[in-house]
Image 1 (cartoon, one colour):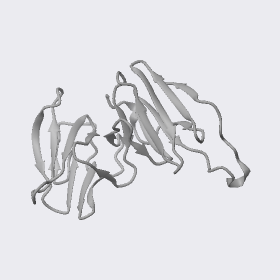
Image 2 (cartoon, one colour):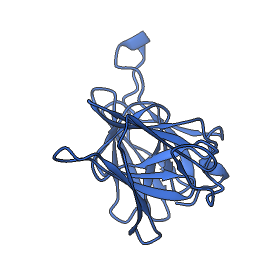
Image 3 (cartoon, rainbow, N blue to C red):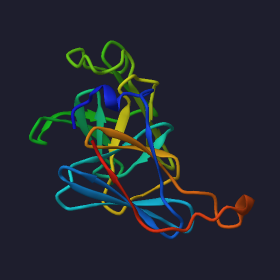
Length: 200
């Protein structure tokens, strides 16, 4: 998905409130994405098989899992967790998804940017001067956006559950996805039919 002004942090977000025990469908040119509310307040993301990439904006340190794909500026990166005592790695991917460059995560942090950081990629003008940081902890590996204009994004896997309030990008449209307060909270009842939203 190309980074455009609509995928930059700070632009207007459309809000989708998924009804309790219900679903909202975001329809786009390539298919639809069903957002299903769960009892714990999370939202399950279920894109059609033909739907393109759904991206989650990283607003706070977000855990990475083996095989996760990230977007920063115009770069696509894949994360591969370390095994058998070996450190994890980030792979810079080309337009066909092939590995162009491997970056080993040897220390507790690794920063990436256009002009500063442990890894500098000056050819990508969509990257911030210092764009993101990868945090390697005993509990896992996390990515953190460093207040970049275009944001850091993680590809959402089919069936992945996101916390209420997450910002996702579908076909260049930004959506803040939330669930209403639980039944009985302040006397509000939001149960209702499935709602359909059309992505621009």
